[in-house]
Length: 329
Image 1 (cartoon, helix red, strand yellow):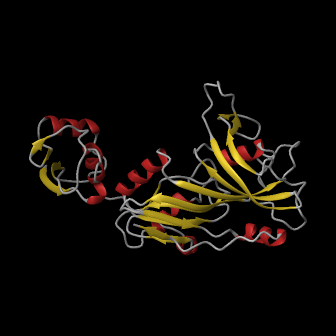
Image 2 (image 1 turned 30 degrees about the horizontal axis):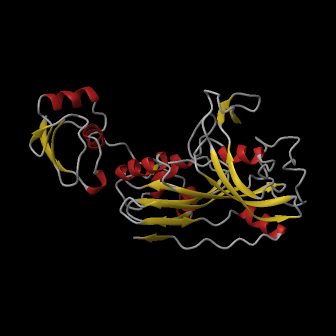
Image 3 (image 1 turned 90 degrees about the vertical axis):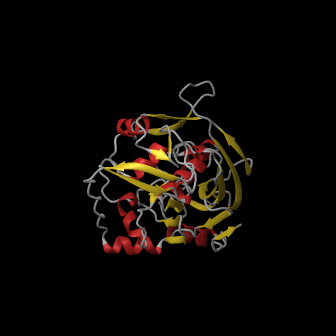
């Protein structure tokens, strides 16, 4: 075992010491880190510290390093066609973050029966970086649009904290059956996860239900076609699973193509279809506005997917093209 000294980078600011050690030396057990701190083998700027010490930029960390460190994990192989498609989906990129326009039908993570998913392709988005991009939030498999990725481990922690703190403004577009009344407003309806014939789903909950979690969505009707189909702008103020889909059903305006949540007595999502419209889910993450980890505010918009563009054209909805991404300092 030898002693190594490393300097805390800007990307690692405010990270806990034990997490910093595991990042630099993957596989190091927490009990060993605690022992090193207790015996003074780990020091920060020459001083003994606890494992929960928060680090600052420029500090010097001395830590033991095993003489035979574990071999780094090999970079996974990504199908060349998938890699090309994913790279073309990038709509914003800098040293810390990436934003892609996630295509329809691509799961973000794996699961039972899912072998092809975004998380398994992220090595295609390294663009020369030593770090593999990291997921910091999710979109449903059939939801399209702006998906934020972190390019470094430190950035991932900062972005995850923004999502937890609800500091990221998210705007979705949806085509729904019917026309909600009123045409704009706020949906404040608790939700909970339940089992059922269609598998696990999200359902409305009573306000005193201990399994319920508060869920809030602001909505606005941007256009409508003969009151049979409407274009909604949705702003989730909370981040519950399938929140927008269930909230749209609650205002009697199920999202077009949403077989999982449409209700027989509520403007059937498919009975309102005009011949020739796609039956794919019409829910799109249009815009993200967030504090950039390096300062300023980042705004990114994603253009509609092909099936929603076709529906907009048929219904006469005029959606402006996505604005170029911008970062205001």
